[in-house]
Amino acid sequence: MKKIVLLLAAMALSATVAFAQNDFVLTEQLFSRIAVNPAGTGNDPNVNIFSLNRFQYAGAQGAPFSTLLNVHSYFDKANSGVGITFSYDGSGVAYRQFQAKAVYAYHLNFGKKNLFSFGVGLGVDVGLGVDVGLGVVGFIVAVGFGVTVMVGVGVFVGVAGMGVGVIV
Image (cartoon, rainbow, N blue to C red; front, side, top):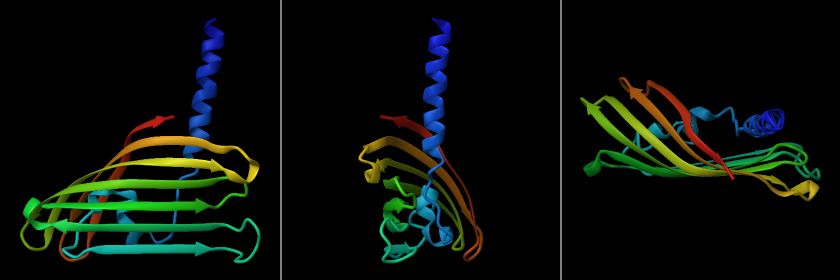
């Protein structure tokens, strides 16, 4: 009985690790900070809208396609930033990934040019096996966290990670 439980646990962990390796990655992460680190939300007093699209082998059937949309803003009275981020990654032949997150950051201002912020994001990550008829192959509800320090103008240092993930 112990061997069966151990085998089932190992299989479940293996499936989780395989799914986690399909993270959405773009080379322009500098411009899409809130997709990775929620503490970057509202680091500017303006409403920020960022969209990025990547097409490979345009026109070919099943060609890789990725897109990202971030919208966030700063609210001075609450010293907070709020935003949303959506991404779709069709980088594989039989696998597609959709992510949607709401993000929040609280900012501590130290002078006019220094900032320390804490952020949290809550969202879903849906894996789709559309080309092989599998439908939804993975669904994760995740909570992410982050910390960002801004020193001077335009110098950011940040740390981010996933706090809790539930696979459904």
